[in-house]
Image 1 (tube, one colour):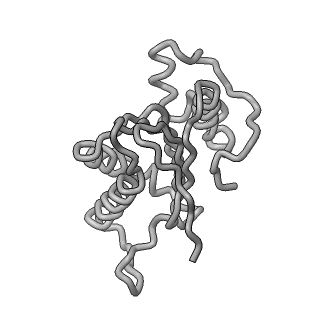
Image 2 (cartoon, rainbow, N blue to C red):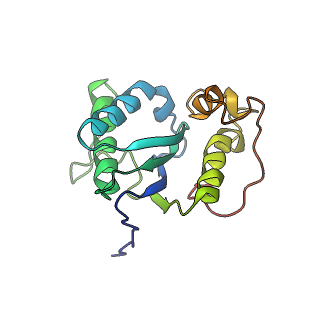
Length: 175
């Protein structure tokens, strides 16, 4: 069994990528309210700041800031994934459990990267906001409804006509 080494920095800021098992699914955007409810429910008991996000049909990217005395992002993701899956079942989606009683909606693991400095933060925010364009879903980041770019534009942080830049490196995105 492979043991992944995770960065566990209390109070850390992290970039995450989570992906549904079915790469052709559109459940995250089709059930966006359920996903939002899952995030809000978990934040009530295990708080985190969500600095940036983009929810695509079958994967999502976010940047979280954890509380100063806390590094347990894995538990938060477990709870969000479980809450979202249960909400889909309650909505009548015909998900079938496997032999262990798991629903296999999500890929087991997730990508995590601790943000190191302001430049690292800026690069990841731009990557997140440009991701719907990269995947051919829209022509401009501001056209994608499930993104924090709209908050960034309202706050004057990002120009409404920003179109992104070329990105280098692996940000945990699945090709």
